[in-house]
Amino acid sequence: MKFLLFCLCLIFFTVSCSEREDIPTLEVGQDFTNSNVRILSIDTFTVELSTYKFDSIITSSSNRILVGQYSDPIFGITRAESYMELLPINYSISDDAELDSIALILNYDGYSYNDTTKVSTINVHLLKDEVIAKDDAFFNTSSIPYEETPVATINFRPEPIDEDSLHISIPNTIGQELFDKIREGDVNDENELRNELKGFTLQPSDTDDSSIVGFSINSTETYLRFFYTIPDEFEDNEQTFDLVINSTSSFPTYFNNIQSDTEGTFFDTLTDREINLPSEDANNRSYIHAGVGMVTRIQFPTIKKISEIPGTGTILDATLRIKPPPETFNDLLPIKDSLSVNRSTQNNIIENQLFNGLGEVFANVNESDKEFNEITYEIKVGVYLEEELSEAPEIDNAIVLLPINFNNTVDRIVLEGENSKDFKAQLIITYAIYDEDE
Image: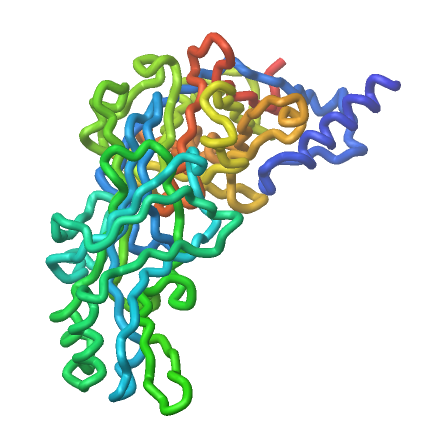
C-alpha cells in the first residue's frame, strides 16, 4: 500500500511540475494498477551543438555607445567603435555670447567587459559623411568614412561604477565656426547644421588591450557641450549649449561597429550565416559572442526514436543541461545567469523566442549547482520536442542560444559540447507511457 501511494504521489508531482499545460493528466484517485502508466527517465538521446555567425546584426537600435578593444585567447581581438550624429535641442545662442571651451561628455551606463584597470584610449574623429542608413538601419559591420587625424585623444582607466562620466576636451577650432553661425542665425535647422558638422566617431587605439565600455545615449548624459560667457558689467554670465544624440528619431542617428579578429581561431570558417561549426571540430565546445553575432545552435537528431518505445506516451518534462567550462569565464569575462532561447530555421534565421505553458523559455543557471561553485545552464525544451515529434515533413531546424542584450554587449560564453570529456551536453526526458500494449 505504501508503494502504491508513493507511485501516485510521484506521478502527480511530475505532472504538476511539467512545462506543459495540455498534456494528459492522471486523477490522484485513479487506480494505479489499472492505468498501466509507466514513468521513464531517459538521458540517451543525442544532443548536437554547433556554432554559427550572423552576417550582421542591427546595432542602431541599441541603447548604449560601446567603445574599446581587448584580446581574448579564445575569440581573438574584439573591438567596438561608435558613430553618432549630434544635433541641438534648439538653435538659440545669445548674440553677445563668447565661446570659452568645448567638451564631449560621455556618461558611463555601468556596462564594461574585460579589464578596466588597464589604460584605454578613445580617439575622437570627425565624420566625412552624414549618418544616413541605406537600409533604415546600421549594423555591427557598418562604418562611415572619417578624418584620419583625431580631433582629440584621451587615455584613461574606465570607472563605469565609481565615476559618472568621462570628459574629453575638444579644441575650440573644431566648433568655433559652428558656434558663431548658430549665434548669428546662419544655422537654423538640421540640414544646415549637418553641412557644418556631420558627426563623430569614437575609436579605440589599435594597440589597446583593456576593455570595452558602455556609455549612455541619453540626451541629458551624453553630449557635446559648448561652454560660453555672456559679458556683464559686474559679473560674466556663464552658460552652456549642447549637441545631443537624437535617440527618439525615426531614423538611426548612431550605431556601434563591433568586430572580432578571429584569425587563427576555430571561427575562421564562419564566413556565411549558413555555415555551422560542429562542436566536435571546435575542441568539443560551442560558442556565443554578443555584438559580434556568434550563437550556439542545438539539435536533437534522434528524438523521434522515442516513438519506438511500446505504448502511447507523452513527454512530461524535458531538460537540457549544458555547462560552461569553469576556466573560460571569470570576474573580467563574466557570463550571464540566463540566455534567450529561440527557434531557428534550417538556414539559421531566427524566427521567435521559445515559449511553453509557463511563458518564455530561458537557459537559466541552476542555482543549486551554483552553491557548489558549479555553473550549469538548464533549458526546458519539452514543448519544442513535442513540436519536433509532430513535424511532417521533417525540417532541419534548431534552437539557438544567445544573450538577451545581443546587439549592445560583447558578452561571450563557451559551452561544453556533446562529446566533452568533462561534462557532456545532456537531454533528460521524463516520459509517461499510459496505454502500453500488454
